[in-house]
Image 1 (cartoon, helix red, strand yellow):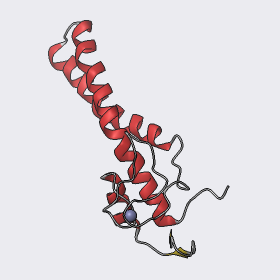
Image 2: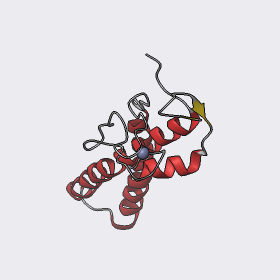
Image 3: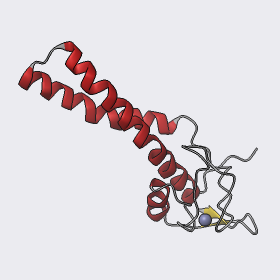
Length: 128
Ligand SMILES: [Zn+2]
């Protein structure tokens, strides 16, 4: 369920297109406006369709999902590398620390956008 920006009344919206639009960092309603004003700072509203974005706060959920996703990528790669090549510890550090950081920075805004898009579609928002 989304909210009509003119009347602020709920209206149903399919969740998958909204989630995918958010994944791209686009407005969950129109898919054209930008969701973020910076790296992952949610804008107050869409510049194209005026859908209010500020009430849809993801809080800590994007970080949890990012850790979950990055952990499921990096840890198996690390274990396979250790089993196949047994590199020195500094090689592990040189490989996995930058990869973990880069993946986290790349994935975090996408996950946040997807979560905000899902919240928008389901009508989950703050009321204060
Ligand atoms: Zn929009």
